[in-house]
Amino acid sequence: MMYLIRCEHPQGIEVTTLGIKLKKGDAFECPKNVYDTNRELKSLISAGLLSYHPKLPVVQEAKKRGLVAHARPPKPAPQSPKVIHTTEVHHHENQMDLDSLAAKLLEKLSGVLSPEMIAQAVASQIPQQQVVIQQGQNTTPQGYSQPTDDLTFIPSKIISSDVKSSANSTVSETSGSDEGISDALSALRAMRKANK
Amino acid sequence: MSKGIGLDIGTMNLVSARIGNKKDVSIRRMRDLFIDLPVSAKKMLKLGSVSYIESDEHLLVLGDEAMEVANMFGREGRRPLKAGLVSPDEIDSLTVLGHMVKDVLGEPSHEGEHCYFSIPAAPVDVNMDVVYHKGVFSRIVQECGYTAHPANEAMAIVFAETAKEGFSGIGISFGSGMTNIALAINTIEGLSFSVARGGDWIDQGAARSVGGTASKMCAVKEKGINLNDPKNREEEAISFYYKALIEYALDNIAQQFVMKGGHLTLNKPIPIVVGGGTSLAGGFMEFFQEVFETKRKRFPIEISEVRHASDPFHAVSKGMLVLAQQEYDED
Image: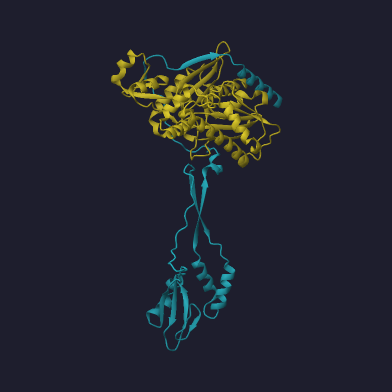
C-alpha cells in the first residue's frame, strides 16, 4: 500500500529523515512501511504541515463489447478421478526485472526521493507469488523409494498365549518333488563360487 | 527335515514352503480370512466339525472354513490384509494374523531357524509404504521362533524361476491385493515396485460394471474362467479388467524403467516370468502375451520370452525357500 503525502505549509517544508524538500502543493508517494516507521513524517502530519491519503490501486476496467464482460476464473483442467495427487506449495519471489523497474522509478522520482528509499519501496511492493505444483504419485520417484528405518510402533507381543485352539489347524498341506528349487540352489552356489 | 523356510504373505493366502524329509517340498497354505463368532456358537461349530480358536470371549474361525461359516451366517469374512498390506481397518486383528502365520509356519526345526518372508515393494500409484507391514510380520515371525528375513516378493519369482538365465529377468507376481514387479540382473535387484491393483481390483471393477458383488466375481474367477472365451457378461467384464490390469502393469514397468532404470545395463534380452494366484485364470498367459506383443515395439527392455512360472501359485514361497536355504549354505 502507498500513501500520497502532500505539503500543506505555505512556505514549504523539509523532511530531513527522507531528504526531501517540498513546496506547498508538492506531493510524493510513500510506502506504508516507511510511513509507519518514520516518526518525523507522522509528527509533521499530526501538526497539519503535511497531509496524507492512501493511494487507491488502479483497477483495469474490463473491456466492454456491447455487453458487460465478466471476469471468469479459468476452468480447471479435467482430472482423472483415479489419479491421486499430492500438492506441494513453494514460495517463490516473482521473477520481475528489478533493474529496469528501479531505473524507471529512479528516473521519475530522482528529484523527490533518495535511491535507497525507492529500492526499499519497490522491494516492499513485490508480491509473494504462490506457485502450485501438482504431481501425480505415479510419476514421482518418492513412490519407489523404500522408506528407511522410520520409527514405527509395533506391538511387543502379537501372538497371545491365552488363545485356546479347538482342534488341529485348518492349514492345507501338500508335498511333492520340485527340481526347480534344487536347480536354483545349485546355480546360486555355482555363482557364488565363481565370484570368490 | 531340511533347514530354512519360505513364507509368502499374500492378501488372499498365506503359504509356506520347506524341504521335507524325503527332499520333497512341503507346502502349507491357509486362506487369509477369519470370522469372529459369539461363544454361544461353539456347540454348532463342534457339531459341524469346524475348527476354531477361543480368544477374548470370541470364537475365531480361520482360513477356508471361515469362508464357509461366513456364508452360513450370511456374513462377510474379515481379511486382515488389504491391498497387500496390513489392513488399517483390521489393526485389532493382528493377534489373529499372528496365529495364522504360526499355523502356516509350524514349529521351527531349531531355535532361530531362518525364515524368509515376502514383503511387497512400495506402490507407485498410491501413497502407502511398507514400513509398518514389514515391522509387524518381522515381529510375528520372530515370535514364532524363527529368525525373520523380509524379502521382496517379485524377486522371489526371479530366484525360483530364472536359474537358467543366471537369475536375470523380470518377475511379476499378480496377487490379490497388488501386483509386484522386480527386475534383476545376476541376482541383483535393479528395479522393484508394486502397483495397487490385483485380483481384488478386477473383482471390484467387474462388479461395478455388471452390478454384482466383488465376492461373486471372485467366485466366478475361482470356479474357472477362460479369459479368451468369456461365456457371459460377468466373465466378459472380468476379462476386460484382466486386460486392463496387464496393460497397466506393463505400462508401469516401461515407465519405471525409463525413469529409474537408466543405470542398468542389460547385455542380453531377459525373460518375463509371471506368477501369483491372479495369473491362474484360464488363458491368462495367452492374454498376457497378446497384450505384451502390442507393446513390445515401444517396450524399453529387450525381452527374450514371456513365460508362466512352473508353479505360479507357490512361486513366491519357493523363491523365499531358496533364499532361506542359502543361509545354511554359507555356514
